[in-house]
Image (cartoon, rainbow, N blue to C red):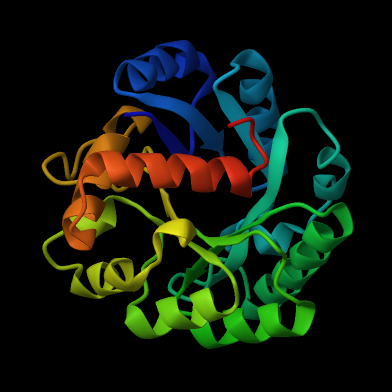
Length: 248
């Protein structure tokens, strides 16, 4: 089996070791995700340092209050495959909701202008997230990363043509809503991620996460779908390759 970790946050000083461990586990490609200007620059450095890593460039809703300076200019850099992660997070409101909405709308526009995929983070903000997407127009390749909604939210995202990316949460005993979403997600719209170093899957919950743990997420997703892990690996590899325009 070969896997693509659709969403992770790596460290440059341990990159070589982490990438090697991931490859040994069958995780051959990783998308390292920017959350502000500094981490986006760092993602570019990691993509340049490894032929198994690609970068996204964007501003997370937590950082929206700081603006988007420098973000659009980075989209032309080698190794960049998407805009984001961006969106809304009303759970913590580290940035004022108005700033979050403005930054999200601007990054949707960037994705359209540059014809790039869009990576969305949304938490406790589904109605506003969908409203802003509808107003700006859903980019052709849009993914809800670390999907935490239920069947209703999944259907709303899928009806807009989006992909759903599932993390280790799908293995948590309390995550029945997420499993309901995963159960109805078509195989051609499904992605997998670790969101490392966060959200380690069962039986590693509570420990630092890493891309090498992605097969555990895939196995949990396979159980929900009633499939062999090999099928989930194959479909999510193909989906991520198409989504980010990677070589097959």
